[in-house]
Image (spheres, rainbow, N blue to C red):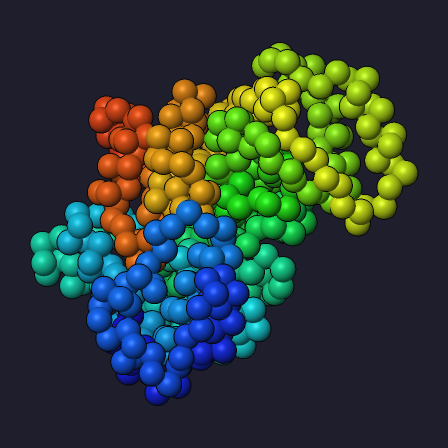
Length: 419
């Protein structure tokens, strides 16, 4: 990354400087940046995210990548090739990589950059094969939650019909970045449309990958868990992180959360609609209390912000609600992507032992182990499996997770690959 940035005559510093200063209180001097951080260890501290901090801190460091890269076709092909080859040397035999363009990326450059990445995947596979380390690499395009995702999807579907490289290499769409402020219900119609397309044209079917329950300071843990359930119901195939679903409910003790009235209304409706089933998993709010709260909320505007203090009683009720939702998820084909390092830092867990992966397994949740952003977190897949072992997953279960992961690849989940 240092080399790429130094060779870039026009780094886009404006995308990085303010966000880093706001997050860390440190001013970066662009004029002397490559002299100030010439020592690779010093640069590594600026670049790697190995601290327990909110998503915005992670994004501030991620913005350094965005600022330093040219992000032109040549660079995309080169970096993609290098990443695929590097992964193959770590004995990874199958990988799905994610790529994201700007919100207003023009159609022409969207196409040429997409092709450049797919070319890099092909070249990476060829180099890996020469090293005796064969790898199959596929692409998932990350789309923006708030803008142009439908248009970008339509472009790619049309190109898949015409270009075999895109049809063979592109296997899914993804929604990542900041999840706060973007309820899953807003994607319900779109997900239904994608599902219909997959059924109508299996040879160009795309999986839906959706980050949810990872960072949720804008709502209560109850609503965060409901978002996971809604995402699964809407048709997502793999859910990124879903920490809220399985993290120990006592983790939130003493918290004061804020939540929009609109979210509180949605939560009440969910609870009342499935009250009998929820309460079969343990103690919960009295039904009369929920009905009274619903009446009170109806008098409030959706945009009003509520303050909720999280106490021991709510922790007990959250545990019940989590178990209910996990039981619903377990009955579907939905898979949760667990990324131990990412979850430790962005989720601000005390240690890897606090990761909910063992609770997921105990509740028959289908899951994979991933590295999220290995460059930023300074990690590898073997290390992530090691962290999962530290979290309490047995060697036998780790091997089972590894084997089953091949059944959770995008082409299987979307219905493109039926065997």
